[in-house]
Image (cartoon, rainbow, N blue to C red):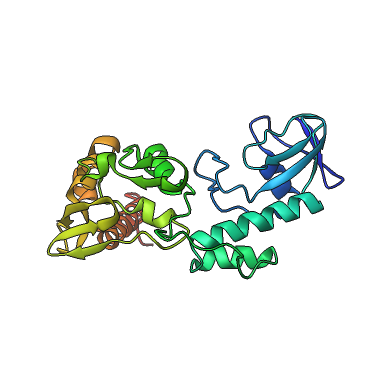
Length: 262
């Protein structure tokens, strides 16, 4: 297990872990925006910058992607690091000054306003990549991706047309830190306008509630080793069915064929 030093404190971590993991073990706060524990680190937002001062190539590095190697010495609160984080916070605020999460994060860095003018065609997306990564890495669909470069860079489905593989599962909406992505259920369909997606909704076979898209349920039935009739239930009915099954199992297990009254 590699041992490294962060702000003068020594810590041991697993070989696969990063400086961000090590800092969290020491309760040292490093701000993050594009990082998610369930996804591979990306280093897009640059807010987790730290300074390598020993045991590796000196300079600034993103804590979420910097491997925690033996002998590494890291400082997280130098003037250089603080100034760079604040500058990045200002640039992000110029793209989306209304994001509650971003405003809270920026305030923690001492930034409450930005000196930069917003892009005239801004769409509030901060290009953190969380939506594209959750779609490809966890959901396995890759229905959206980055296109173009520089100021024109954005996220969209292939050729900016309706994607046949977007299930409208809502995973991208759940991880979006800006609140930009939304869906609505209308006329028996789930609609995500950002991806030009419109998928018919499935109904619970027990209560009749529309709870997920048909395509999503078809994909889950292929990938999960669970009874189809279980997946055809909405979350509430699944919980009810599972509770009843567990209760029946417990009752059966507690009943002995040899038990008799004295």
